[in-house]
Image (tube, rainbow, N blue to C red; front, side, top):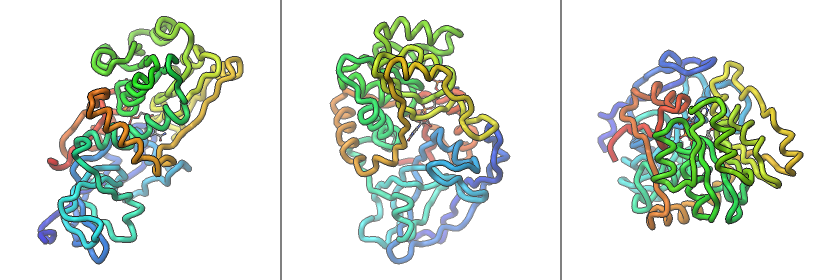
Length: 348
Ligand SMILES: NC(=O)c1ccc[n+]([C@@H]2O[C@H](COP(=O)([O-])OP(=O)(O)OC[C@H]3O[C@@H](n4cnc5c(N)ncnc54)[C@H](OP(=O)(O)O)[C@@H]3O)[C@@H](O)[C@H]2O)c1
């Protein structure tokens, strides 16, 4: 064991942001790394998943998970390597996924293994980046949101916003694999080009191209209406898509990133065009990915197969260094990430 010489660098919540979280909302701390006791495991963080949901966890508000407490290490899912183990289920050298937190090392006592959700992952199925993307939480969100709630039928039109992001890239590619037309909505020509030319979406609407770009784009690319809308952004784009729903359409309420930095800490404006649900006998349904945890292995096997046979691609946007956490997180809310945003803490 070499742990007595190791120092753990951590990022802790210093104060709650009203709007955008900036560097002053975080504390950078260090502490010595301790060895695991009976049943425990010590993990070195390799890469962390930076997610829009992290912004919500900073608000002192009721949600599907308690907020991060002031002074607590910031919550984050990540991939790590076991460097010491007193638990027969984990060996030194195993690659694992879990809620590791924004820190270089995490000591997981036996009683915390379930809370941290520590599971072994197989790097033969995908890279560390892919395990945080298609094979990880965003991929599971896209898979179960689209297939379970969206129930897409071959030939139907699936529209997904934040199409070049982590969840969006899985949704659109999966929609194509299931025989649907996939129309993305993304910010800027580079993302839209990639989504169509590399991922094989049928079309992508650049919502930044002008005030009527989404309305016009939906009219052009969804002439028979939208059968499934996978909503990642909320706000005005949601309203525009609602106005274009097909009869019996399904709207998956996955996220509303356009609203997360609102000062009142709750996603602000609701949809204006909701009566379109009535007229079109349509429905909207919210989803939380963790509800599907028992079925993750089935989804991972299917998605890993698509990655392997080339029917699916993945793109990760990797930033190096724990100290870059505050600015890197904010890339999500300005569209600064191109692909799944990953913070690499140590080489794999
Ligand atoms: N319900 C669940 O269980 C669950 C699980 C995972 C994620 N989610 C949600 O899924 C959504 C996507 O998450 P992700 O991890 O895949 O993030 P992501 O799409 O990789 O990154 C966020 C993207 O959102 C877009 N965006 C930011 N501000 C926007 C705005 N004002 N209007 C329109 N688009 C905006 C940006 O893309 P552009 O450059 O294209 O604007 C940005 O790159 C989020 O809402 C997240 O909260 C929900």
